[in-house]
Length: 265
Ligand SMILES: [Zn+2]
Image (cartoon, rainbow, N blue to C red; front, side, top):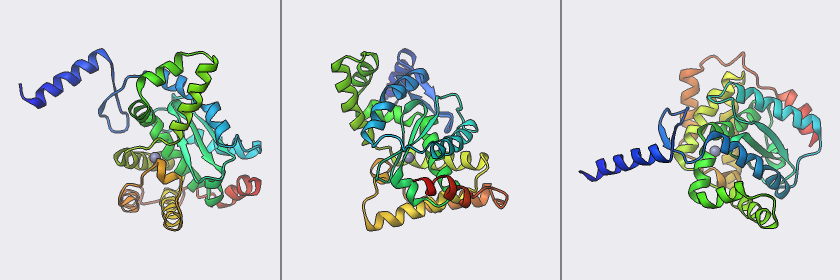
């Protein structure tokens, strides 16, 4: 047998015994060692520790409800609305946003301060929802942290040893980095989700532009966990022009963002 065929047989055998899942965004079969229910369990397990390590939640409940309601609207039109979606603003000065497996999505105070409209916020949340739907976080976690460590942390109860493991793993999770291909897929799927949810897709173009401008003067945390794929502005603008040429009726939400977020930070 050729090397290629041998590899294919091995992958098929592995998929049969270990498990594969279809990525609903790309329709491709991907090796996946966890069930969607385990994504949710891992998300639940690490979310409290991650919140603690990144300054805790911003106290203003109006702001939290506003962010969560926008996120829920986006998740409900995504390729997989069935995860346990939660959108939380963290009291941390870094400029970042990230997703845990299973639907826990976080955005920092530093990022919120730099945005200007609801559609820009929707762009960030939609990009993270796409990572959850594609199960990118779970893939990267099992590659970069290791399946054994994750599984033992999931199965271990809150014994002192288990707590230490969760804290260590949380640090690693904060530093996880996706591939450029996953980033591009999340950009393009996120663009669909925000538009289907009623937001002006140029909010994503503006956000990318703003973050790239900032990155030129200093290091932005978002780019350490989300390497910027090349020509991001180009493929986003092209997709909008071909798929969503008529955006005038879609929401930008500058006043709402000012009222519910910027005034409450
Ligand atoms: Zn990303």
